[in-house]
Image 1 (tube, rainbow, N blue to C red):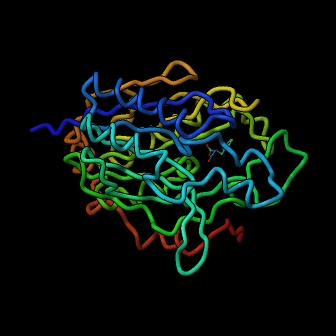
Image 2 (spheres, rainbow, N blue to C red; image 1 turned 180 degrees about the vertical axis):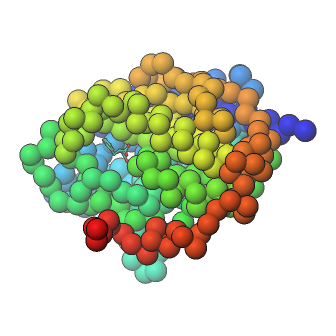
Length: 311
Ligand code: ING
């Protein structure tokens, strides 16, 4: 028996700071329609897919930052995306900056949602691994102020039943941390969707710049194999407001093999028929967690934040 989900990786090229939500939404709808024309059940968009990657700048006032956030999802300017998706009968994952009043105060998160074919939000995730820094660091060619503009996510990594399978999400830097996928693997996840905005240049470690594309695929391919899950990673790519972002959007099978990948740094859709039943071959043998894991030896992973040298 095969549970096939046809998935589209809908990579976005640069979004200019001046680009309006309606202009971006029309790009998203075009990719959604392309996906539909190729039989996609589900389309995955990047992280912060509605605006330029604004954490690259230091803003003096919160008002300036708030222009990049959504206070409702869908809202008047994003509803056309949900409406068109529902008309087409295509679900989607999308990342956006979420502003919300929770526990009596303003909260701001780097958020993603999974929307089913009926246009209903079936899962929400808030980014847990926030890279970069919290204070203005003028020595950098550009800032990476996610720790300033977002709070650490408070929803864990949920796995939900949708598209006839077990679906999970994460966002960008999360994909570099094995714990991210293992928490979902321990919930039986069969497809992890994620979006990313990854600069080619990392100011604190320029010696890594030549390795950006390699590390991007390395972490997602290993995670797919080690957790017996599909992984769909989708970039916001290209030269965005003067900052080069990597592309390399991919669809990766539980074998760890890349089955589809983008080859441009613009708006580009690639798609694949993903058989969710392929996961069983790994979950029931080499990565049968119940049979082979030894959590009594893993305590340090949870109890210790930073490395402690005692040798
Ligand atoms: N971006 C980057 C990522 O983890 C980064 C942070 C930049 C890492 C450059 C390495 C090099 O892909 C986000 N948004 O997390």
